[in-house]
Image (cartoon, rainbow, N blue to C red):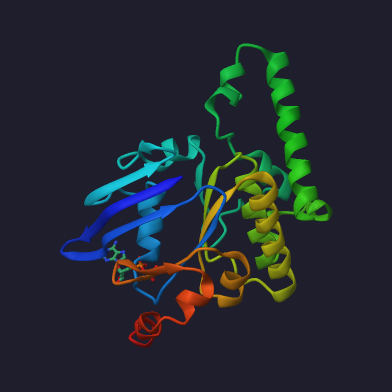
Length: 250
Ligand code: ADP
């Protein structure tokens, strides 16, 4: 689904990503771990099209997308969520979901702008999908609350819900466990697993919470100094001496 070949991101002489090559298979939940400064966030930025790499290539669904920007990638089904959820505080939870544009341009309201009837139908469809998403995430009871009033964990669930509104194919999750209480963490894990197993989502997640990585991710990729140090199942990666060394040198 995704193939990175020799990616380099050079910030004025400092290579935050330095010859990173990896493949992500369709249908997996790939965990990206590594000490602070290993280049994980920069790699996510490159994959999501926040800025182009200094060199190297990115292929998504068989096509070279190295120079595509985040909007174009979004329309192809590659969606990134953020460490700090970017909800619209003043809008309700339901409205937050309804604001998300569909990933497929052909389905946009704009495409139907000539026909009021079609617009109404499309709006009704978006609203139905938003309610379905809320039910799936068990957030129906807060549908009409302002998103800014949600707990940290509920905001993460909402963020996941926003990706569901887009019919994403590959979702990049940036520290989904950060700031989430244990109860909601279990729920978040369960929803990620269902989206993966039953709805065909592929995920890459950056996470420091090793319990979550162990539970969800196979394979696990450990980065250090801008490149892949080792890739394998959780226990192989965790017990590798180079990984321990990389964390000790953090
Ligand atoms: P991680 O997410 O693994 O902690 P980052 O990708 O955030 O790592 O950072 C990797 C390295 O690149 C760090 O040393 C960081 O200071 C540096 N870095 C990240 N972004 C920039 C930037 N825009 N300009 C210069 N250096 C940067």
